[in-house]
Length: 267
Image (cartoon, rainbow, N blue to C red; front, side, top):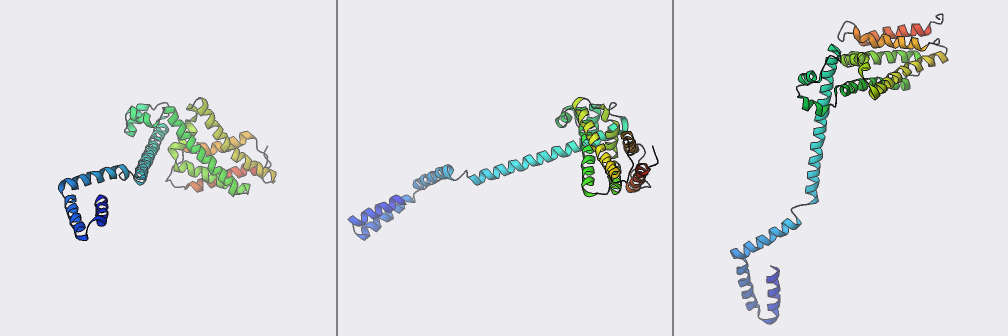
């Protein structure tokens, strides 16, 4: 249409209006021929492909789709690893860590050896991930109790409830934490030992605070280990869903702890 307009303009200055209209009609007629239409379409298509077909918005959509798919894949992998941990904890708690092989874990999970190793690097790494997860949970909940409850006596009850509730809710995993952690080696064993100490220190600090306030007598470290042993080895007889609720058992343990700490006549 640009060429036609230019021709019309030029003809306007050199000829009459009628002649110009006749020229315009002939030019328009030629533009409507199949060959001209095809050429025009081809030219428009080439221009569109070069300038319009790929836009930044399209690239953004593609990127968003890829990110969404990656997130879903990561979520699915996380859920599968969680499932593997749960099944492995049941096996380790029932039969013991050393008695359970990787093939048995794979069969229980429903994965072949290669597929299983996509989610775990080794059986020991699987044990480590279970133990660290739940001991860290105890440490975090214990630190929260330290921050929210200033009274050492009330804090003993709070720590007691948090610990027994964790064992009640995650009995297979906590059984593995307390019974199988010594199967870990090297750096993994040191990390878990440090976590155990960090948790024990929360109880020690609480008892020492009570001592400074004149509420408790001084307790040797072995006494604190004995108190925590009472809690830790409750996995041997605790029965979630039994006659006693977790808080009832926790309160009995807390009263026993306070009776030891407050008995100033003891050696």
